Structures are given as structure tokens and as C-alpha cells.
Image 1: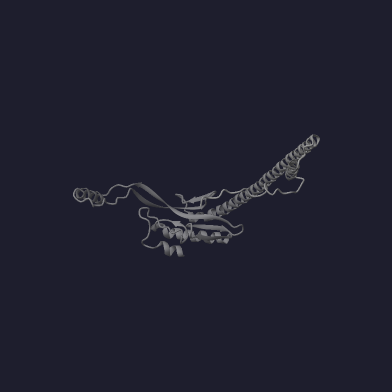
Image 2: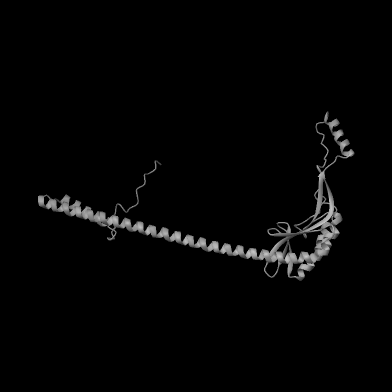
Length: 275
């Protein structure tokens, strides 16, 4: 087993906790040297038992972890075997006390002296193993004072199968909720877009009606002006040009008349720059 070879290395492990673990490379175990053989045997038995039930194991080299996958549904769950380590406040040893005294004596005249590295905690292996599968939801199985995990392997396998079904059901429900939300969002966007489009069309209609009324008013005013000028006998060429201009502007304003104005429809002039 690759995990056996990797975790039996003598060095390269974090100091202090005594644990050996390389989750980005091999099966996710986190145990001390003394518990390594037993943890490897337990992992091997668990893998074989779950493989018979339609599961497969994968190493996630990127995130660092081990997945157990239910092949029937594709449901994936994290799996890790750990050893409980007791942590207690570190009691300074006579050798550490002497090293600390040497530091204080030397630091009086040598400011480059380094304070001795003294652990804050002591870690004690217990040999108690735990199998944890899944994250949310998850299941744990621990050694007990009377029964070790090897004798409860059937219980663990059965629990993993139940957990896989629960997670699959949860994933299906989550997928259903996401799909319902997607449909609701799509309908909301459709309704809001349709409403905005309808409102824009209605505003355009109101603007056209207003412009039509303005055009009718301009024509009526031009007609009234022409009638007055004729009655007074003062309809000059300039007045006639003005009446033609006014009626042309009314036609330009009227949405029912498709004409363009040479001046008002042209781009707005830009002020030239100094340079």
C-alpha cells in the first residue's frame, strides 16, 4: 500500500503533535508511529469491505483528503482515520531549565543569544482510533474501552451506506431547490423585462399622442394666423414663408407623418477645441 510506504518515513513530519499524515499523497490517515500498523490494517479492511458494497476511494491531491464514492449515485464523502492525542501543559525538564538559565546568563553580555525552544504542550498518544465519514451530515465511529473498530467493521460499513443514502437524498433535494430557484428567477426576469418593455412602449405611445396633439395645435394656429392675415390683406411673401415653416414643423412633430427636419434631426454641433 502506498500509504504504508509514505507514512513510514522517519522524517518530514510536523514537530510536537507526533502525528504522521500526508492527505495530498495517500489515504487520509493521521496517527502516530505506534498506531500506524493498526491504522493501515483497519483502512485496508474498510476499503475492501466498502468496495464489495459498490464504493470506490479517491485521493484529492489538490485539497488534501480522501473521498469514498458510492458508484451507484456518484455520491462522494470524505473519509479519515485519526488517532486521539492527549494534550497537556508542558512541564519544563531539568535540561530545559539549565538551557534557559544559560540563556539568561549569556544574554547579559551577548544580545545575539537565542532563547531555547521549549514546547508549550506535551502530546501523548492514546492508540484510540476514529473513523469519520462525511462532513454535513457526517458519522463517527470510535474505539471503545471494550471493542475496537476492527470488531465493529460491519457496523461501520452499514453506517457508511446509510450515510451515503442520506447524503444522496440531501443532494437531490438541494438540486430540486436549485432548479426551482432557477425557474423562479427566470420567470421573475421574464416578467420584469416584459413589464419594462410594456412600460417603455406605453411611454412612447403617450409621447406620440402628446406630439400629435402639439402638431394639431400648431396647424390650427397656422390656419388661424393665415385666416387673420388674409382678412387684414397683409399676407406677404415673408408671412407665407413663415406659415409654410410652421406647418413643416408641425409635420415633423406629428408621429403620423414621416418627414425629417434638416436642422433639428442633424447631430448637435460640437464646440471646437482651442487646438
